[in-house]
Amino acid sequence: MATAPELRPILYALQDSVMLLAPKGWAVVDVKVEPIEGVLRATELATQGQGGTSPAAKPRLHLEPRDEAVRLSEGLAELAQLLEHSGKSWPGGTLRVERTGDFADWKLLRPDGSLAWFSRLERAELDKLLVTDALFDALAGTERAFDELQQRFERAVGEVKSTSYDPDTRLLTLRREGGEVRLEAQLLGRFVLDTFSWEWGWADDELPPETTAKVRSVCAPDAQSPGLAALWRDQFHCDEGFAWALMGHVLVSVGARGIFRVVTSDQDAAVFFAVLADP
Image (cartoon, rainbow, N blue to C red; front, side, top):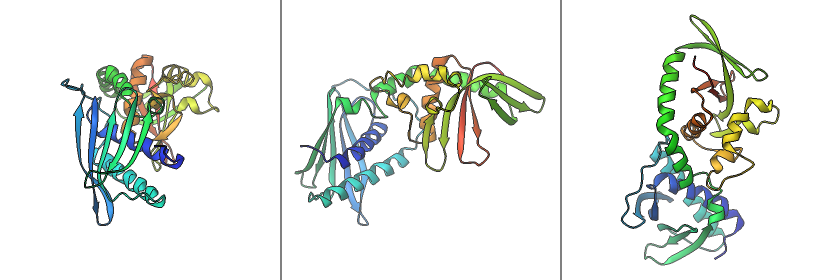
């Protein structure tokens, strides 16, 4: 069944939410959806794996599952509302997502188990989403190394009074109680606090290319590797913790020593640097 174009972005966001909430390696997800105070809400989530193999643990994404469940509920309520406008009523019941290596089938089942609506996300679409098994594998491969590097870096940096960054020399100046230190650093990107959006530094055409060259080489926006859109999409909405997980992978890949976070003077955004030398 073809899906109206206006429904595709909602399905993409819902697929990301399911990927974040379900264990790695799932084959079927059933989400119980009930009307609560007149609004559809996801109340339970159950999964089936692929055969008898226990799925590998997902990398830490620093997310609050309860918050993601709220986003899932909001997306399902919006989907149901749009379907209602097109003459397809879904009073709640069960959301069932079944996936193979080639597609993910989305089914809205009524309380009696009958099918209210069906749509399919093909592999080409799934490979362009933010949250994928390929991304989990990439982050898991560098997670431990990042934890060790970041802990060592934060101990060495200590308390910083103020900072500045020169994009021409690529030097980050950290002013501390005992003086200041200048360290070579690459701009990772910035997180806009009020809109919960991440922007990779290499997407800013006004910056000297050398400022983000190492980061860009890992994110590879020109290659657009399947399943790694979170690295090559220039900006997107997410929690800051998710952005940290992405930056940690990049940090290890470029051989940096740690991430340094700076809040802008207007308090609207946090800017992140991959520091390439020990303090």
